[in-house]
Image (cartoon, rainbow, N blue to C red; front, side):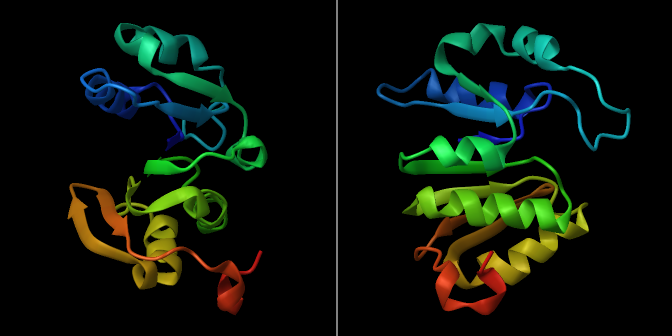
Length: 159
């Protein structure tokens, strides 16, 4: 599951790996309206589709805000890649909404950890206590979920 696809660079990398495996589903969620991007709002879905065209058979897209799409989601996730709104509030919401679907020992990746203060703060506040095998790969923070996220057990994690 990819939250935040933009023009499809990470989507292409993940989909190319999915294409080599059997019985793997890959989903991506984005509005493709460029909200919060420095160049301003514009519809980027056509560019995304053109960029991921070689792997289109391996990708299922959900066009909408992640907090809306998650309301309809009910499947376990093996890999959760988050690269959407980098503000603390939005990144925290994505983590709290989607990590409960991540399988224990599943991989969680947050892009731009090294360059976005909001992402780094969410990692410190929410993810460090529940993740293992943590590593920084370029700007991306990656880890395995060691134990389920319990929002009710910690006041800072309640919505």
